[in-house]
Length: 243
Image (tube, rainbow, N blue to C red; front, side, top):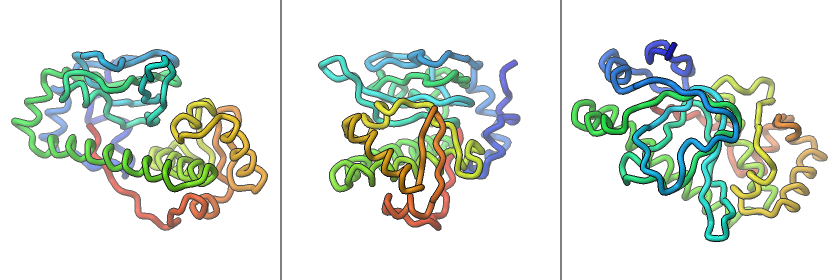
């Protein structure tokens, strides 16, 4: 049976802003069902005009763009709570593809109802604007990382961000979290060669800071990882809307 929005398992995590009864009622009308897809399935294709929007309930995936050569460039990783398809909802077609890395369970929304959200629920519409603004911020941060950071610093920054996201969702325990991606995916996302990525991962492991092996990331020295990533260890988590 589809999960009712008021019983959504993601709502228990403090990282997500609480919803009012009115907003919950709208979301339950906005939601049309749930789907489960297998790892390796393409959920949304670049250039497609999907009639549906999604929120990831469980599982992990990635976003990527296809290059003229046919190769793909990973641009971000998808975690539970992420809203998928906003580009198609606003720009009529996706500007990137979304693929399931593991089995994914997703809430499904009717794209045609998106405009009623802006008309009748300005608070929810602001949440979508916030999501778009954060995506723009992350893109800017990614460009700065590619332009100014060394390889080991880029990987450290990525591991801190991924660890923090997982911890906020209850997916990390004692610094250990599932990270079921390929080294090539991480290399693509950070603008590094696979060989250099492998060397930097070995350096982090040898220094006792972090180890990524067999789909599991273990952060053994979080302060040292943050220091490499040029991030403070006492950062306050930023709450976010759950669509």
